[in-house]
Image (tube, rainbow, N blue to C red; front, side, top):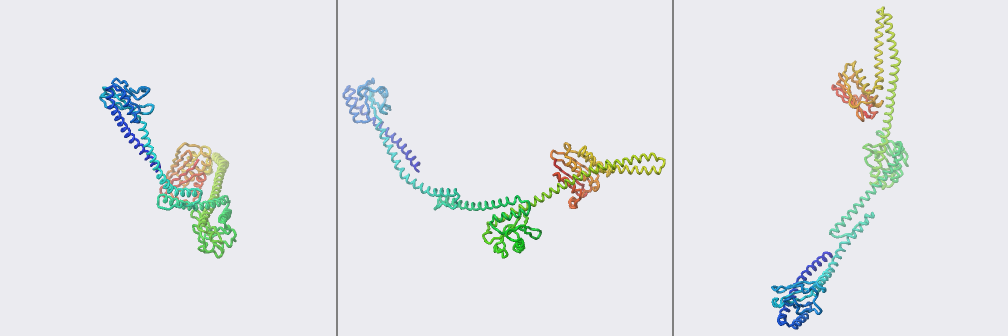
Length: 594
């Protein structure tokens, strides 16, 4: 308001000064012209008679009656000075500063002198025939009047600012005081004091702001309370998690969980019971006998375990305990492992907020139990896989040993027997009956030798160790399918390479089992086996056009062959897929990372 009033006052002063200055200069110029014209009229007669004395008198009278007149010059037609008001001499350049033509009544020229600006007015004498008259009118008084008028306007403007300042100050105080209260309340909130409110009354915008601030403060106070509660719960959960995270077994976990829960809740009596089928078993107790704890959990009021912590007997004291009894479910992923039971003589021990905390603690304990069970199951599964891996390795080693013994002993003995029979055939060739029996025996021995060699190949094909997976599968497939008159098609995709021995053995045994199943049970006419080598894995696919079977029934029946195939694949981190329908053949696909 002050700046607006000051600005408007200055603008008004500037415009008024300009207007007054223009008007005053017009009046000053008109007065100057009138003075020169009057002087010229009086000076004409003196100039005609060349009365210099009269001219000087007129000059003195004019200067005396006109305070603004600074000098007067009377010039003849040849611009020579007839009379002048300068005592010592005319200033240099003054004679040429202003000239009037014969057809002009006057000519005005503004001249800058040592005393300031002077309005030099020239008028002709007798239409210029006698010369001309020049009068210099000083603007000093004019400027002084204008400055005085301007000062008065500025003084008025300054005086008008006083009531404006008082009004603005009072208005500012009216506005600032509630804002100061708001600032004070804001500082209190910044210090964490949410009980401080801004005492603002009224219906204006600042009052609305104050009401909004107070509402925000109340909301912050509620949020702070909820945050403190959440922090307490998080600290309790963190303490509990730290206590039970290093438990090596279930008993140690439950005892640590019970101790930490009692410490967090500042209680002394509690116990944990785990579910076992339709009953419950007490596994950890504090400040209560296990038999008494078992008696209490057998009561009707304690049998029901909900999804949150609750008080038994509708919040009243339990007669057996002579205290309030709370049941906390130990649940994780919709499975309830058991319950944590707590007792306290005071009803405030189990307020709604503490029951919510107990529910969170129970969930934490339930998750810990589940994680421990999962870890135990993983350990058992790992042990089973390691045991199975060793069994398979032992089987392969035993297969190798038996194959070597069959080759080195039994097959060699059969070969020697066949050679001996051939010798006896030649020696006893005259006796037809004996010779016929020897031929039959020779044929039987050759068949036994061939079966032995096939058995040796099935136990451990030497081509698998010497040439690799692909030649071994091709050789076995052709040997197995030829007697059953089944067409065997073998294809290799990708860059063929040697794999780790245990991977080659597993893939060969899976292909061997699949081909044997087709030969024995499928009544197929064709088998197609594809082996695909990729950068990170190897895939084998065995397809036939046989009778097919119900895969679900086969898995439920627990066939040793199918289970062995899946176990070999899973031991190497791979997977086995079997797709089959009755009458539409079978497709076996195995994928193993390398």
